[in-house]
Image 1 (cartoon, helix red, strand yellow):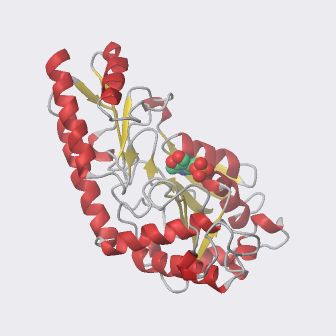
Image 2 (image 1 turned 90 degrees about the vertical axis):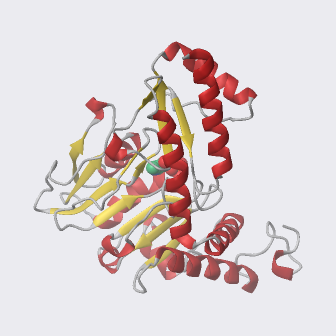
Length: 335
Ligand SMILES: Cc1ncc(COP(=O)(O)O)c(C=O)c1O
């Protein structure tokens, strides 16, 4: 903090125009390219405004009025992405399972994409509902745009099969305030000009994500997190650890009728595990007693209710083991 890379300047005061910070952002971009195997002709951006800004910005840059895009709606974040894109073009939900409580993601063949759609948008991991794709969704041959906010670098992703990947950094990549955006040559070729400066991908690509002051400390943390990932087996190492954590917790949830996992088995997320208790009246006591044991943050999002354990990359196996032990004790006393 007080002396960034021996420069004599602190991380929070260093100019983003300094050579020291240029080294930091270059390093962060190189690490993203290496860790995610981003093709050389793809652009990498570190923007602000969160994934929520990308809901609109993707559509604004990729389609014009009257042009079409199809959305796979698997939770409230995809609903929001669809709503924002509707301000730009002709967008529809090619699949939507809100009626089924967003318990699963679609399998190929369960939806069809309009022939004249310009792209297909999906959300790779549904943070609130605890569902996730375990396959590359069929896009009917159209470019794929994905909101990967809650499983970026924690699950396999074939970057070359996508044209836009966006993700807030705050789950697996560092602190809040940085949004990673990865753009294919096709995405860059959609440039239609005349967009508001800050909402135009070209502005940020042409200035190396430094058209205006970037989130310097957030990008520094992202670089450090990626360095940690590289020392710990890269994306493959993270995937292996995440699968092991999720298997332990889902194993407990499948062990008796006391537990009611929210997601259908084939769509279960390795990042966010959601469940109810068969006796929902016990849920408040479960969350309270877990907190007393030092296991916090288990209350599910109010839209879903129940419990949610987020097993992001920084969550250790030891934490999940502690949770499972607590669950066994709780069931023993209340089952
Ligand atoms: C999948 C997904 N998309 C979008 C968002 C919104 O991100 P932000 O708060 O960075 O705008 C979130 C936040 O949790 C998310 O999980």
